[in-house]
Structures are given as structure tokens and as C-alpha cells.
Image (cartoon, rainbow, N blue to C red; front, side, top):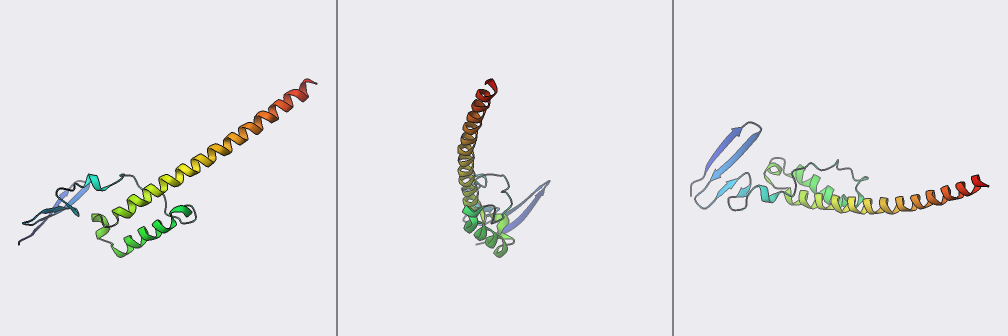
Length: 125
């Protein structure tokens, strides 16, 4: 079994390719898998501070540990599964915060409506 390693350097893109008899590996993904299908989103995550994201603290720690343990392999998808879990956790956390904020705003609007009604009644007397 002979494998050939090639490095293609294009502007803003470095692509590592291993050619083997059985399969072709591109950037850590096998040929049939597709690089684009492995990533949940191309966006960066927010800063990984544990006190700002208590719901996702465990996943953040695992993700940071993965990056420390795999300084090169992280560029080839080693930590991608954790990144996807982290993105989903952030989305769930944001949805809960959004719902809580909406409920709080409804309460404040009701209080403001009552206050305006009382002020209008007292100013007319």
C-alpha cells in the first residue's frame, strides 16, 4: 500500500491530501464524507467564558481540552464534534434567555400600562 502526501497552497486555503490505494483523505475527511457536511456552521463561537455560559460549562471544558491535546489535529476535524455540540448548546441557552427576556418584558409592559393608567386618572382629577 503506497500513500502519497501532497500540499496544495492556494490563497487563503491550505489543503492537505493523502492519496492511498483504498481511499482518499482530504483535510481529515474521507472522500465520500465531504468536508462541508461535517461542520454545523462556519461561524465562530462566542468567547468561551464559563461564568457567561453555565449551561455549557462541561462542553466548553471538553472543547478547550481537545484543542490543547490536539494542537494540529484540531485543524483537521478532531474537535469538530465538540464544536457542533457547543454550537447547539449555545443556541439552546440563547433560546432560554430570549424566552425569559420576553416574559420579563411582558411583565414590565403591563406594569407600565397600569402606571400610565393611574397617572392619567390622577391627572384628570
